[in-house]
Length: 324
Image (cartoon, rainbow, N blue to C red):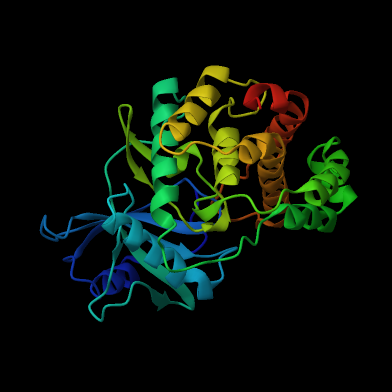
């Protein structure tokens, strides 16, 4: 369960009292995620303000100086009819607060469920909404560099060390030279926007085949829109362990995206390499998490080999599945 910091009922109640949402009724830790602590909060607030919220405490990988960018982006997208939860501002108007030396934010709760076995229709809907978000976000005034690009992935894997990587899986050290080559070949000057860059199925809420919310924008940054599509393709189009590719899901995702925003020739040509970069990002972050996560943290470590298998697939089949 992704709760790194334990908060007492008294501390939570005092925090919620800083918002115009009523009194705290309950707070339950949320299992998803590996970087932050999250709770589903229920209050006595009126229906106008809502009675259920997501409370997030920012623990790892997030520079607190970037938090206004993330939260302002949520508010901008929500105000422009994207299915994104707005932030709940406290009584002073602030979108975040400090608690026990860590930043926290209260986020609107939107209905929906995260699918574990997406259908082509659901993948198509995700592609549509992703393209709509990209178009809308091009008008957002903020910007943020991608600090998890391919050069960073290669460096993180190198810093993990051969012995530590081999202790996770004997094949993992072989990924390091691949990561270096992908970083060296990375395409430049592709059309960009603000991208989500972490759009896994558990970061999308759905009602049937309709996307009700995109959530967890804490890796959002300014980067190539086609890269964001590649990240989403890698996250949605495979079995969880990466052993099986689902072509009907991958194709529907891209078709849905292109029904709103047609890819340029150079973007489509870059997708095989962009997909490799996407997988390497998660190989490196999962390997680092595996090595660094405290033994007593209430979080389930994720296997980096799930994305090594995706990487191998894109290296073999990328040009065929994305076409030219």
